[in-house]
Every structure is written in structure tokens, then in C-alpha cells.
Image (tube, rainbow, N blue to C red; front, top):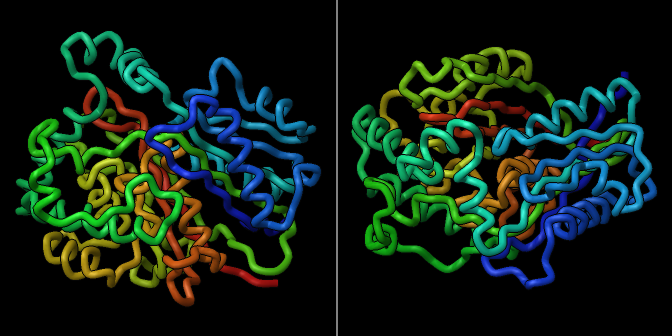
Length: 379
């Protein structure tokens, strides 16, 4: 079996108001070409493609491959939202190990124009279309507002604590030229932002943007690359019978770390899916990065202080959420750090990292959770 590796990353600018000529296929192709350039490869080297996108429809992954001039041995499409990136990575890794392809590009992203996003969330799935939208519950904000209330009560948190998280992410975004929001944020800015669904203010809710992110993987990489040490996933982990504060990651985290042969405290860089501050903290708790007792202190002493490098490109809350590409932004930034190509935001001597995904809103919260542990290698 081969020992595959991530050899390149690419990301477009994340845009709130893209040019009228912008298209989903164009963004995906641009991100793929940037990642190939980062890896020192060309489209002719690619024989595998994985795609995650909501707005590529009615086209599919194979249509994008044709438009990009690709002839493939492996092709996959995933539509599990925030969990898509890790899903695609794990499947591509297996394909490369099995010799089904030699060079795979994974790309995820979306372009939203006009009422595209409203149409998406109104009929996101049967639950949204038939049960939530008729009640006026449009999109995930009300659902995550209730989860935030529950987390605040369970851990003694207040809005200032979540504000400290959002301010830290904005500081990280300042070093990312592709981020949609880079201007400084003060605590007063955070507290003064209009309430959307109490206790969530506007700055707690992920901003939707147009953009795309890509990874390049090779079956037999040379030079610096990123190796997958371990991965885990859980779907419908409690069939929505729990309180939503524990994600599916809690069920496989111990196996993840055992397989990786390392511990949470050894991570040099962390990427967790951050569509809302509540879920950033929930995944850190489930991964064992944050203590079950003393979460408030952890926020200020480890995250807001910069002691633990997390979501170092600004995360989705400041860089923006590119639809189904949100998880790929998180994953690619961890890979970029381990490759040593993160520019102004580079974490010195980053060798180990963890990235998680979380997505697919059901009637109360999300159904998919996954994570991977990654390590820098050099041949």
C-alpha cells in the first residue's frame, strides 16, 4: 500500500459581493489550479477529483471534471456540508492507498447570488422544508441560539466569553489576505451588533460568502507533505435524543487519539468547524482540547490569549463560510500550517494538527461529525 500525503492547498478570495461574472464552477476551478500550483503540479497530473458544493447544481463533479479538461480514474461528490471536507479526505486517502489514483484534487465551495442562500436553507432537507420553514424558522440561527443558551447555562458562560472568541478569530483573519472580514473587532463592536436570535448577535452568526478551497493529494509524495495519522466519523450519533452539546466526535475521540499515537495537548495547530462559537467550543470539548470544568478560563487563557493556535486563517466566523466549502477552509488551513505555507499567520515549527468537521442541520442540530489528526512529513 502507498503512503499518501497532502502536497498542496489553494483558496480563492472569500467575497461578500462577487463580480456578476462569478460562478461556482469558476471558483472551484480557480481553487483547484491554485492548489496544483502550490504543489508544483498541473491539471495533466490529476487523475482523481472530489467535489463538495451546493450551488454547482444542476452540474455534478463529473461535469466540473469535463469543464476543467480532466480525464479521471477516481471521482466522488459529497454533500454533507461542514463534514464534507473530512469525508472527502478520508475517502481519497483510501483510494490513493489502494492504487485507484495517483494525484487527487479535493475542492469545495459555493457561489451565492441574490436569494440563493435563502432558497437553500428554506428547502435544505425535508425537515427544513416541511416542518421548520413553515414556522418561520429559516436557517440554523434559531436552532443554534437554543444550543448557545444551553451551553451558557451548563458552563457559566456569558456573551463576553463568546465575544472573546470572535475577537480572536478576527485577529487571525487580519493575517489572511483572502478573508472576507479583516478589520479589527472590539468587544464593544461585538456586544453592540444587532441581536439575531438571542443570545446570538450578528457577529456570532457565520457570514455567507462566495469562494472555494482545494487540497492536492498524491499517492507517493516527495519532499514536504502532510500525512493522515488517524480519522474518525459519526453520523446521527444520538438520533437527536440528546441535548446537542456533545457532538458525534465525543464517541470516537479516544480511538482517534489512540490510532494517531498522540494526545490533544501535543497539537501545534487546531482547526474546528466554527459556524457558531457554541460549536467551536463543543468540538474542542469533545476532542479533549478543552477541559469539561473551567471552560470559561480556557476561552480566555488558551484561545483569546493566542496560546493555542486555532482556526488560524480566521475561521468561518471572520474569513466567511463558502457554503459546502466551509469545512475545507478549516481543513486546508491546518494542512497549510503543517506544510509551512501559511504566510504571516504561520505557526512556528508546526508539526502536528487536528481538524474537525460538523454539519447537516436536522430539526434540532447537526447530524454529521468527523475529525482527522495530521502530521508534517518530509522525504
